[in-house]
Length: 203
Image (tube, rainbow, N blue to C red):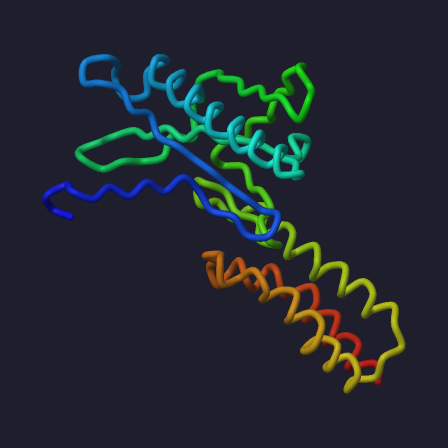
């Protein structure tokens, strides 16, 4: 509300066994400058407290946080003329270690670069908005389909149905969560389309 009487904190999201939590640096004015080592250390400490608390809550309720499948990303912003841009270079070194269950030995959690993609519910995304990994995965699906189709003895009708019912479904599953240019879509789809065209000329 405009009078600041209600505060809403959003710590993260979860769906089935995929979860993500996050936090921002909150330092008093004059304590540190944006993007400084002090600010980075503060946000890492806060993140560690949040994640370790989450791990403990899961453990005492007979659950577990799989640290081997976990990772974290540090996002820093550069302000230029009042516009914030995600910094993808000069990432400052930082480490995050957690314990699991009854274990006392800290486990270091891998840190990903903001431009790196990661899989969530079948969609490969990255904080920077890069879709390179998603494009590579979709292109691989298209190439594998083209390889199998070329070596098959399907007739024209059967190959068309396999294209419509199998390939298109696999390719379009993740596209609503991606931003792809027309040329990028053409590059993804071209191997399978070419294989279908070649097969149609043989029958």
